Image (cartoon, rainbow, N blue to C red):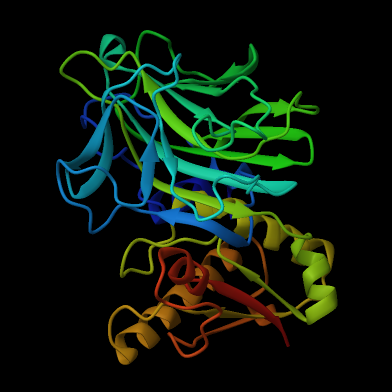
Length: 354
């Protein structure tokens, strides 16, 4: 397949011919998810898509330091709206985990969330990810600089890069995906499909997270959604050598659909490279769901999702004879379906040797 055709396919499956609520006349970036190499952690520590929250209320699974922060209806989504916050204080939200007074971030972890930007520079705000908790971890935290997120740049302690080809005066309206990975001391950060942070040695120990937005005055407000914190694990190939299969929650789909989300491409790229480097490998791609909905619908959905992953891997160069697919619906949960984290762990794709 030609590179240009592959790029068009990746953009189409991810729905990235537009950005969220973007003006259709806005400039669109040339996203190249085919080069994306972010692989999220496999054990979910915290997950919140804010579905089920009530407009105008504070998000039920979060705490805050100070400021004015509440849920808002934005398009089809329930989102966190930073009505009045000052990140220098910091005024922020933080996940209300049971062990939040402890260092709940392991030596290897990933953080993902979506942030919204407008198509005029004066309307845009700056987001911040703090890797500690000033409310609950006073005795154990080692405060470092926050990760600063603007519409075209990620920055940590004056280190970082600008999204290639994006004019500072012409921001792009819509949702952008932020992905952060930490491995013992190394920090990497991605804005959409591009890595903009690559720091080999951080100067502090991450212990928790807080999210904030700065300069929130005015009629346009900063929004976030789809927050996930996950524990890193041994490389997927090592898991395969040990167990004859590996499990990933990094391949995500639109709700109740088999449409692969763009940020899933990093995990898929990893598996494609693994199979390219080891031509003897053959996998059954097996889809699983949580228990929401009825059994028959979940079985059908899991089959469609597994087939969508197989089809994309074939388009990325893996011979069809090396892959099969099947769905198992909700029949084999890995965790309880009574928490968002358990449900997210059950919505998974397994690659099983055959």
